[in-house]
Image (cartoon, rainbow, N blue to C red; front, top):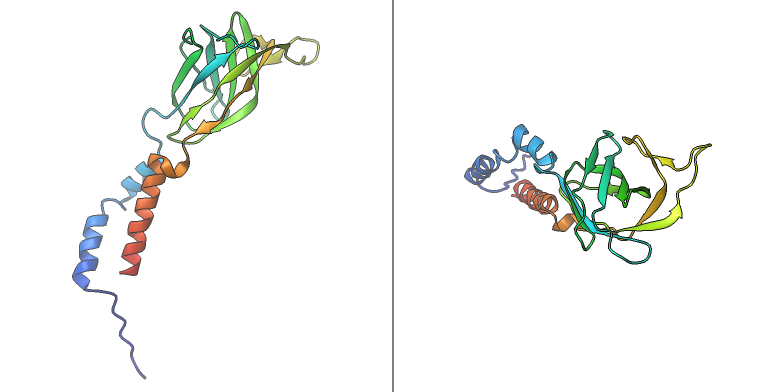
Length: 182
């Protein structure tokens, strides 16, 4: 019987790499890597009326579909810009309260972790569809119905590989591949 001795590099190099990488591969570090950054994701954009005017003083309501939690923006600026911060990742429905009318956004949006997304909303003059005998659409977390609609104008977001999580995944995968090869 012959014995083949396969050498993958000096033992001291493996021990050194293990000592350097062990804090990164601990269960605590791995659990931390899965959690979104404190503060969560962010959505920014503008609110426009059907006639092209800016939707000043409008409030954007984001309804997190998994938890049912409703998050609110501050009233939009004179140019219609708004900013929603600290959002957990997941799917959202939106409602915009502008000039006393609640507008339902009929398209749900998926918000990835640690993302800054740009969404513009265009408010419609058309009434929302009726459900049953009551006018308007029910919005989760609200005691009144949406009597207007709005459309999402853009879904621009930072690509995963340019985000902090994407870069960390590439670096971690490269280091792990290097350890396995050596």
